[in-house]
Length: 259
Image 1 (cartoon, rainbow, N blue to C red):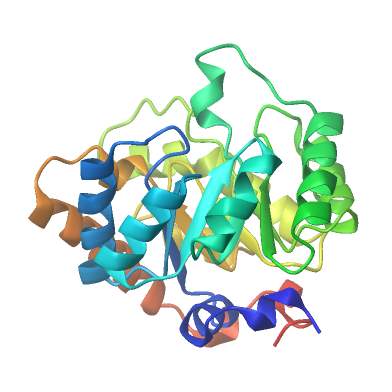
Image 2 (image 1 turned 90 degrees about the vertical axis):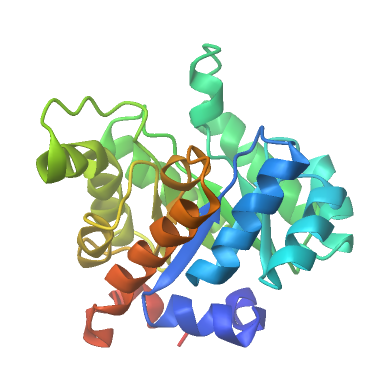
């Protein structure tokens, strides 16, 4: 039986209906006040999953505030078991956006090794792995295939940091999301696990991500850059409504093995 079927029922259903919304507080965000605000906005706005930095304390905080399943992100597999013991439902290797400004690039072999180590440490835990957007699409595709073979249950895309939108308004939002959506299209056709499209996604482009083959989306800066709590709630809700407007018939073939 797929590990995905052991997810909490509401989260599993959101994944199966291609309406999963993950709110990402940030792999390097250990600010408890920030995580608390993001968790509250996620709960009220209708998110399905919150992605926090890999800290048992943040896991407990986000669970207490939101009541939602928690994903923890890190690039150090040895940190995951304590977070899972504290209640995390999903562990995530990546995403890698926070490292690019420091000129830290993770190669395919390194990510595969991190995946193997994590799977050995946590054989029964749902594991998501990000495919770096710096790789050409054909290399992203091959890495995704290799990651699934190594034990990944979910593949996540990224790309917002490399996008260079030059247009205002809706067109700019589409330009911002294009790299991540392109990755989702290529990878979802190559693997038999669900793909989450993250980085640069908005309420405008989330339906495009699902149409491209994603089973859910992740949003981060669109929420956590806001200072006003009401604005954060509205931003989460607008993306969730955009996902809910999609037909269930848009389910990609990658989900046939888990439904």
